[in-house]
Amino acid sequence: MANAPHTYGNEVYTDGLQNIKAAISFNPYDWEIHARDLLSANSYSYIWGSAGLRETDTNNRDAFRKWALIPSRLVSADFPSLKTTVLGQEYDYPIAIAPIGVQRIFHRDGELAAAKAASAQHVPYILSTASSTSIEHVAAASWNGARWYQLYWPLREHDEITVSLLQRAKRAGYRVLVVTLDAYMLGWRPSDLNNGYNPFLRADKIGVELGFSDPVFQRRFRERHGVEVEEDMGAAAGEWAHMIFPGRSHSWEEIGFLQGHWDGPIVLKGIQSVVDARRAVEVGVQGIVIVDAVGEQMEVLFDSGVRGGADVAKALALGAKMVLIGRPYAYGLAIAGEAGVSHVLRSILADLDLTLHLGGIESVSPQHLNRSILRRVR
Image 1 (cartoon, rainbow, N blue to C red):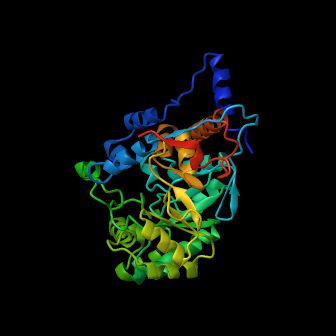
Image 2: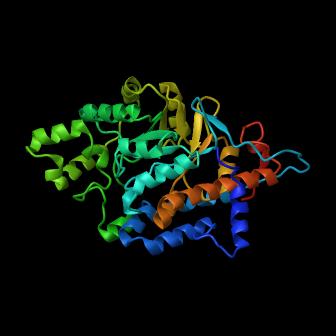
Image 3: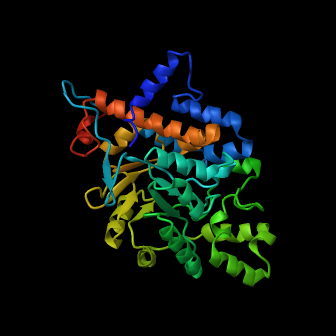
């Protein structure tokens, strides 16, 4: 394992003695600005944009400001343990790379760079079905790093496609299945509409590579059109996009189909109501991405709005077992590829390490990091 996260700052200050300054800011809000200056309007608007008036994005960030950490003093302890056990597996750190698709619009190395950085920093990588790089190539790039697979679930008429994706992921060493429930079609995204830009409909492999590399999809496209996928990429992109964004939701009763074709943990992403959280317990999935309601009965992961280590600490204190990092690493990818993603991950982990240590919090275990160390300030 690499040096403790907080030592990243020591490296930077040592370089500073030789008048060497870091190429990338350590202020998380600077990452967005730096990425904006480097990316095309299409690419930046896609990663920055949200549905509607961006109120959800604003609310997610504001939610962290409602809470403050309560430090304990005269705690004589080493730096905190950041190890966590999630879904039956121990991980060095309580963060993971959130699934973000079309990463080659941010950097030429796309998912390969992000997966390599995640592996190097001992952080799980979650591959999106909307990836611009195949399941197998990302697995090879991440080497022995922990990897999970996120599914945009085709309708049941395409079960053969779904099974093929799940089998490929299992063969390639993806351990956890993350099923996205709240994106069965793209929302109303003004920033993308302004540019007339939908990365899934273009005659290239951006966002559709998992389909283009899938033997079942290839065969079915060949049977329908009499040509290979590469011979009519525009039509193939449109068909694949319609499969993974079909416009209709699945039902609770259909979760059993996934359980019958995946022998590892299943996490439902997009659960936000108490009723849905309890229903997830009833159908027997292993985890959900939500903060509250069923933390005693299943694993809770947190997603959205995380920018720094204190955000991670607050989410863990509120009951999460792992926190997903999204836009920040995509901005790091845009800025400097693999090195940029590594910088973002190391910065967030160093911030978390120091925040807990200076707060007298001995580990990320619920024994030490729980609601008792939080106070409501808004």
